[in-house]
Length: 63
Image (tube, rainbow, N blue to C red; front, side):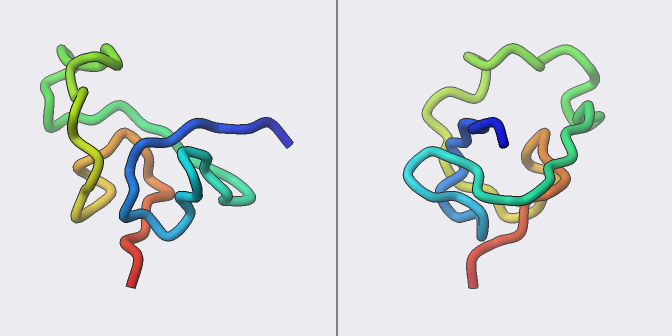
């Protein structure tokens, strides 16, 4: 399986900047009106509350 980098540290599947999920689903985030998909736009942010705050639908908060 390919290593998928991830910076969302509060995700259930995050481990040392790697996604450990067996599968991932990445979608276009409509919240950003299709304009901010470049990786640098969200630089410095490393936590999310919902999958809608990421481009990854696999996100589940740690709990």
